[in-house]
Image (cartoon, rainbow, N blue to C red; front, side, top):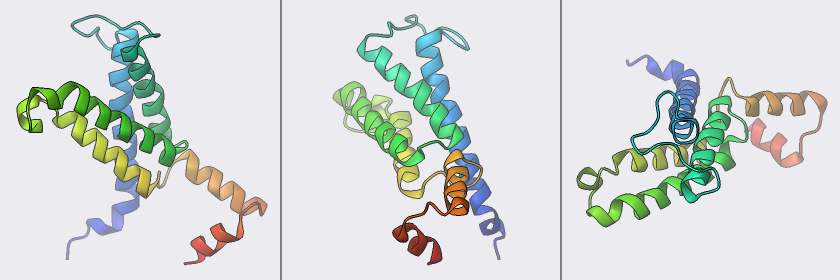
Length: 147
């Protein structure tokens, strides 16, 4: 009786866009001080935190656009697992006690996208459609699309 299943593809795309936007905002704050500088200031680009900021900003934009979603999401999922175990887990066993809930949520949200893909309204879907129309599709991909 619940009607929302009809909108699963659109909700999937909305989830990806919001997730990418929020993650890119973390990177923008670290790298550029936007929308406002973090308490300890922006980071040096050629530092460990600068590298994390670049992954957050550019990876978040790629997720938002749905561009190479599966590999980027897998990389970001691993990054957030590392962030949790480096920054949060030493301060307590549970995410609720060590303030690691956002890292865990991002980790599993990106892990979901690495398995589910970009969905509708993405550059990945656009590129797949172009490959299909041009005939540059492998036999494996044709079989997968047929089932």
